Every structure is written in structure tokens, then in C-alpha cells.
Amino acid sequence: MDAKGRKHIISLEVVWWLITAVITFGVLFPIWQKVPDYPFWLTNSIFIVVFITYARLIFFTNYSFLGENKVLKFIFIAISVPVIFLLIHHLNKFQTFLDEQGPVAIVGNMSIEDEASIMGYIHKEMLFFATASIITAILLPFKMVVSIWKTYNKDRF
Image (cartoon, rainbow, N blue to C red; front, side):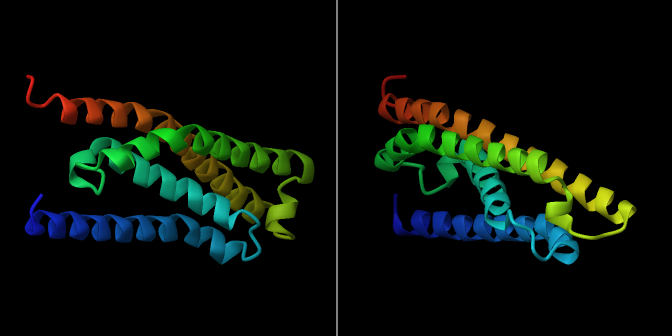
């Protein structure tokens, strides 16, 4: 890849990370407004970032830093199992916290309507991004194997 291609890839990466930051902020902003002591900031942010980043890498591998880098593709394949288990562990930790402590431990003392509204939002978005990040973490290594295979065999077909 020439210097112009590298600059293009770096520009795309920066844009994608900015998009990821904006989406993460947009999703977490309503929680920040209503629940400043939310105990799952980091976990929730990780779910969102992993989902967006892995989905992007699945669909746009050739337009990312992984495009022609076999070593990084192998690294993503190697770390996929620990990442999947870590994501599942944190989803389970969230569910267990809700089951044992209840929503009051998260939202504090609010009116019933506000509590139901914000807890519904938190629960739905956390489950969505947790499940989506786990699914993309499962799919990414398969995409990396196909990408490596295509790179290795591009001259044969």
C-alpha cells in the first residue's frame, strides 16, 4: 500500500472512531442526565464500542487498519475467545446486579414513572449492545479467517 492509501485508511479510522464516540455519547447521555451515579458506565461503553468497531471490521475489513495486515488479523482471531467470555461475564454481572439489588440500586429515589422510564431505557440499550457485541465478537474471527484466506489465495483464483 502506498503513502496515499495509508493516509486514506488513517483518515477513515479517525472518522469511524469519532462516529463511535458520538454514538456512545448519544446513547449514554440520557442515562447521564437522570442517573449520574450509574455503576455500569465502563461496561456499557465497552459494549457500545466493541459492537460498533467489530461490526465495522466485519463489513469494512479492506477499508480498515486490518486490510492487508495478517498479523493483526491473527491477533483478533486469538483474542476472540477471551473477549467473548469477558463480554458474557459483564452481561451476566449486570443481570445479576439487577436481580439481586433491583432497579432502585441504579436509579435511586425517583418517581415511579421516571424510574420505569429510565430503567426501561437502560435495560433495553444495555441488553441490545451487550448481545450485539457478543454476536459480532463471535462473527469477527470467522471474517478474519476468510479475509486471510482471500489475501493468501488472491492470485490463485
